Length: 92
Image (tube, rainbow, N blue to C red):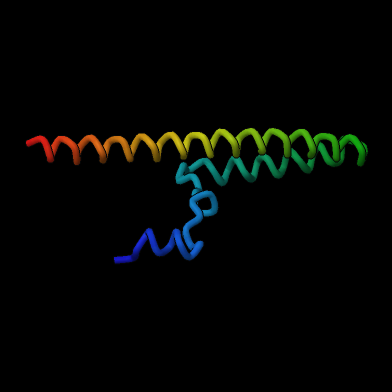
């Protein structure tokens, strides 16, 4: 069995790089976003398009922060659940 602890120590564990939605519409939405960005690229001046990209980059940063907070919360909740189960075993 592969050791998660060794992977973590060696820097081989990077959840953010491994998380990809399994929702069947994920790729379709990505394709539609690309198409829409192409439309806006033609519609806006170069400077306006750069501003739009900067706005989108800021939005992505907030999404990444939300994802990190959700991951941390879920991890802590999982650890608390394990602790509770282990503590109950010791009491019985």
